[in-house]
Image 1 (tube, rainbow over the protein chains, first blue to last red):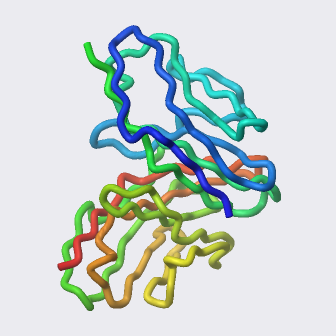
Image 2: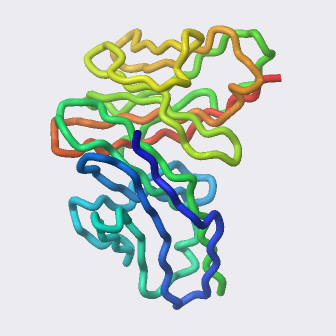
Length: 113
Length: 116
């Protein structure tokens, strides 16, 4: 069974400092990894996915299969980045299947002024 | 931009009562999901629905739960006889406008269910 671990429940950094939110996963196949973000009183929304290798709002995440990690990084945190961040895993495979997401427990990021 | 909507935003019920949580997925999406999040815990998958039938379900999704897409737009989750431990935030999601190599899921705002 797959599992996603986010070791930090809370993370505080100062504005302008680098930030890294850790995510490790356990899955025997080839997973697809995502980061979802939930701003205060808003819905869960997709931040980025590993297959697109894009940078969204200055955030990047690289899939490291050797370390089974998918850490989220931003070089200069902004106050508006304060939110709950969830790492999620989806099984790879048949594109026609409605594959579930397995979420980590989330990290509450607070960016201090 | 189209969004997933859910009603009600908050539902309070007595233990043993039936509740129906409603969701309107994004139109022309093909896949529908229910997740729940008990306070202080992680978001957990309940069930996925595709082509008018359940595609996957978790251990949580026992005989007390059922899903339906009665009219081609609404997607409902029914809990037949609620228990105290069913108190949680329930999220609906939809995705898969096209069959792609990944299935981005778009989440609704959630329904907070409180069982007394």
